[in-house]
Length: 116
Ligand code: FAD
Image (tube, rainbow, N blue to C red):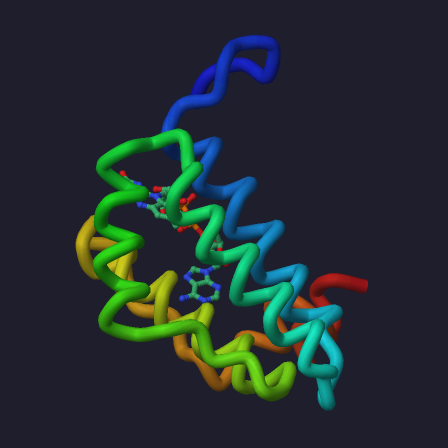
């Protein structure tokens, strides 16, 4: 992809956005308040309308209409987000990610210590 002093292409934008979203899930409370739940679902909804790749945004809005944000707990939001990301992976012909591993990838680090 492009050098970092150039405007981001769709891949760089996507990697940065997924990093932000999964990191929000990683820090999201196990028992979120009603305000935290509406904040996270409002954030994702706004993102789906403002995302600066218009075909991506349109498809993401369709996904959201069919699969509304689920965020009653950290694990529920992490898994919902993993499913949303897998939907894009499928569209792009990328491998499916095992959603049982979302917390190792984005919160705790892999059990084999490779992030230490
Ligand atoms: P990415 O898909 O960016 O993933 C980064 C890392 O996340 C991976 O290396 C892996 O460790 C981890 N990961 C992968 N899948 C999951 C998962 N399911 N759950 C948790 N972690 C996971 N690009 C397009 O070309 N067309 C589109 O329509 C499009 N729509 C998008 C919609 C949204 C909302 C977003 C955020 C991005 C979209 N993108 C789209 C960008 C695309 O998803 C990728 O970010 C981009 O192709 C770069 O891919 P990558 O292989 O580097 O890994």
